Length: 334
Image 1: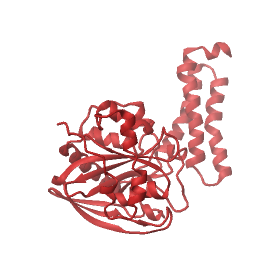
Image 2: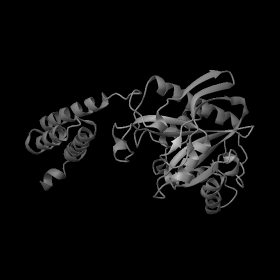
Image 3: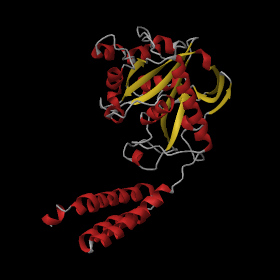
Image 4: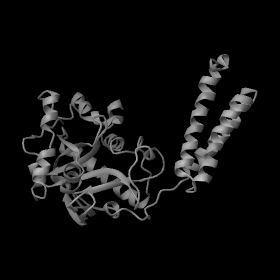
């Protein structure tokens, strides 16, 4: 066995295949039949076939073919699972936003502007709003921490010349009875959903009612880039209305999807580990100069904590202005 473990074919072929088969077992358990007995029986098949082939079949090529076929069947089944826009959705994600473009004007249906009494007790307000893209002056980024300093939820927001803000939060679209699980987010359990909202809804929900620590960073974003970025977001909103997609905690989450939008507009920002460990995204922004670098980072991070300001502003119609008191927009590089 020790000799086997040292062979290149084992290291580069059999071992990865066995690991993928274990993922296949997890995929069947999570995304397969709702009957737990049936799901458990089916989930046992990929690792039994694959690992059994590696251990007992010779020559090596035959073992890898048999194990590979077992894994390929699971992957093919998993990729065939179709997302849907037609489910019994939770009220906060029940309406699908829709966007109409007319030159500089963009009209958005189902902008969420709920009035909260608690995280689960609220009055629903779905609004139709029109924005003038030529009036965009910049973009901001919220980081909301609910536990570990290494992980945060990101929310992008656009500022217009009249002081109005439009926020978009990329989230899971949960069905009635579902709750978010970071583990389940790696499988095909949730559809991808763009919450197009008033800041007083989507930011206040996290700071005032979920008890999260929220930071607001004014971005070094020329208006033309901010506009192109918002248009790319809104085109994706329409795309999801026509063809839903799966959320994935690694490849299609609140931060990696932001990077995809940014790459569509201005390619050239390489992937960085802090995009995956997104609680450190502000450190990356500081290193790349996309947020204010005129003061030390720790001082900036302290100033950008808007949690208490958000709690004080609460139901004020001036919420967005009040949470930005003392936070200047950095000079915009072109």
